Length: 338
Length: 222
Image (tube, rainbow over all chains, first blue to last red; front, side, top):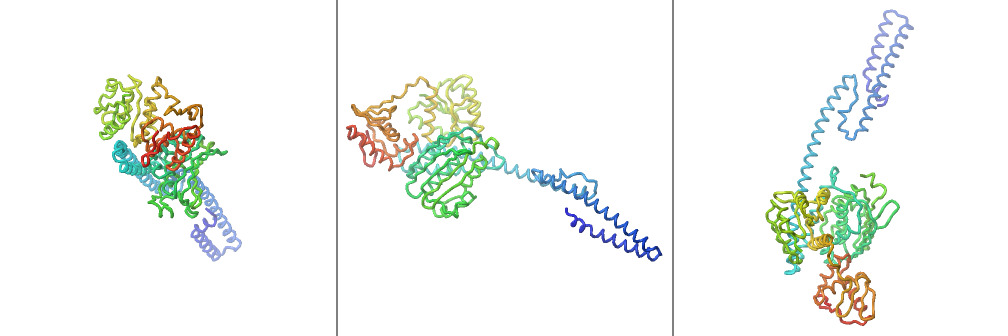
């Protein structure tokens, strides 16, 4: 609150005083007081008004500073109604009551939405768990009959795996929510995680003429399942956007501040214009449009989950040569994130 | 080896049975779940595959019941993927925790791993395989024929290991590649050809020819 604004606000009051001072001056002049007398009275009057304005200004200034500070300190600003400082002024009291009522309804609405969201997320999760039973059945049926009709059952199995991947994306999308905490940070052997992801996609990768070199001796602290999901998305992307025979190189390097996990491919690459946007939700880019149907969700989810795990993720690429994705696992700061 | 399957989904039950029987396990399937622990004691299996979501009882409780009376290895099968569930599973005495959808090869590998871990008396696989007079020494990663000896790379060793173990059978290229992927060698079809050619050259250098036959359109045979 600035002094000038305050005076503008009190303009009518000041005008009233000026008017009254003039009227009193005229009255005293007519009734025959000496001019020195009534000038003294006028000066004294003006002085009192100034002091009163100043004191009021300081009080108000102080009050609003406190309100602003409270607002800044509040984690959830809509709780302000409960935290407004006491004031003897009637207006403050009335406003406080109104703000409190309005905030209360906001809070109720927020709770309601949070509950609905939680219900929805729980439903999605249970649905994902339900759907995994038939997916498993299909996988087993295919596996057991592979010898009868290799081609067809393999094709079904591959499609089934795609379904599984999409279902997984749904699950992790539901879990990437702010309040959800289903991760267990533990010492993780990245080599094992990479092996697991490659084994899971074995059929798909072999049929797509993929070769992989894995060299990840470094240990990191992270959640195995989440990181497997992230790697899975990255590898499937490499396969999706491959040019000729795909060569995947997955390796770790030790940095001063942590461990980098790099995934290098020799695929189409990503154009410079697209590179900054690939982690955006729903962004498909020129590759996504010209290749298969891209959902624009895979990398978006990767980054979101990475953020929750405290991992940096970025991509470097040259068109026609390939892409290198890097995950940066910090060593020193992971504890502070817990 | 006797495996007991406790799973309420009939199709999965049936397919698991086929899968495990194909892998030469003896399989018993439970269809009533009100007295699983007693059934386990009755059947005396070498391993129990236990679904977590059964109609009458929770899998975790069943595992606790089993653990009161027996040390039989238990592998949980579940569609749930929460970290907490996995932890609970381990704390309740489970030996492994496999989430649906599992791939057959992975499931079999983990069953084998648990069985191997719990059976200490298991005889170790011999480290020297012999085939038509050619010796494959797994420990020293080399091939021997008579007095001559030649070193092998990791990939070559694994290819030969698989072929030697299936002596006389025609091994399709896909089977071979899948086996290699299961053993952390991630190569494609072309690289396999290159590797086999190299193996043949090495065999030649120690005086062996025609050990690995190529069956056009089918695969390889030793």
